[in-house]
Length: 189
Image 1 (tube, rainbow, N blue to C red):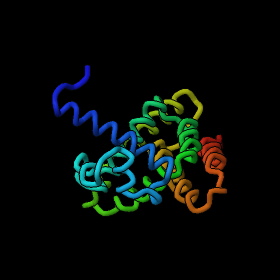
Image 2: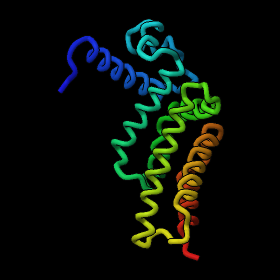
Image 3: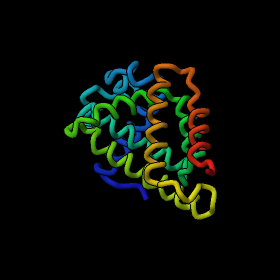
Image 4: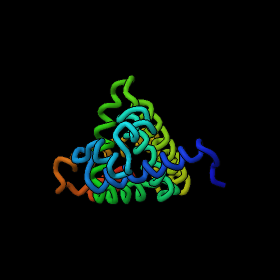
C-alpha cells in the first residue's frame, strides 16, 4: 500500500530522485557529473535536491544504499559466482565504481557520512558470504579446512581492489582474476 500524505509523497519523491541520480552517475560517471547536473536531471535546484538528503555526501551514501538494494534484488543468495558476475556487470556502470571507490576512501574518516555505511556494507557482505561458504563446506564444494571469515574478507577485498585498479587500467580482466582466485581458494590440497 502506498504511503499517504505529504510525508509519504516526500519518501516517494526521494526514491524517484535516488533512482534518477543512480542512473545519471552510472551513465555519465561520478567525476563527470556535478550536483548541478544531477539537480537538473531530476528537475530541481541544487538546494532543492540536497533538501532530500542533507548534504552532497549524504546523497551519495543514499545512492550507494540504493545500489545495494538493487543488487540484493538481483543476487538473492551471495555466492562466489554471483559476486564475480556482479563485478562483471559493474564494468557496465563505471560511474558507480568511481562513486563507491571515492566514498570508500572518504569513509576512513569516522566523521564522514560514508563511514557507517561502509561498515554496514562490509559486515552484511561478509556475513552473507560466510554463510554461503559454510553451506558449501557442508556439501563438500569448499574444503573444510578453509576459514570462511578469512576467505570472505579476502575475496571481498580482492574484488574491491580489482575494481579500483580497473578504474585506472580498464584492460584488467577482473572476472578472470576473481575466477582464478576462487579456484585457488577452493582447491583441494
